[in-house]
Length: 211
Image (cartoon, rainbow, N blue to C red):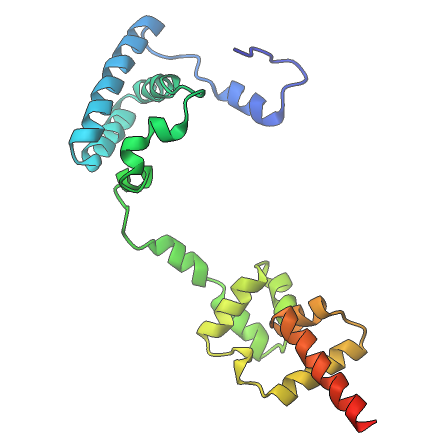
């Protein structure tokens, strides 16, 4: 066990060391004995009863005796053999979809994630419609990915799909004349890089034919 608390300890390690409780109730022997009993019962029950009951039990323990909950976690983690394949340790639950199936909210819609995913839609649409900003400029302004910008505009019906091929090729030609590369043009217009390359190839073919 590494007890190094010198200058080589990283900031994360130091925070964890500083957060280690020093006023645990009782004594180590009694805590470890109780934790071992708790873990054995939990291991049995997680296979036999509704997982929500296990979550509820742990929640109640955490509310009434946080030190006991910490001891349970340490006891449970210490029983895992890092040299044994995870598939062997968790084979029983992996057959049923993994440990996520033991979570009480498994299979339910993630309302928080949904709200978070759509939280920038109004701002993105405003910058596109009223500000006339490109996809990449919007992404930089809002602080999101290009994919997030594209999905938000698609939900608002503001996709690039409605533009004619000729209009798109004019935009590509204009940006290329400004010195932008295919990747930069694709980001500006919110389209695939290959679409840019094909449009430029068609433009060159027409110019060569006209010449």
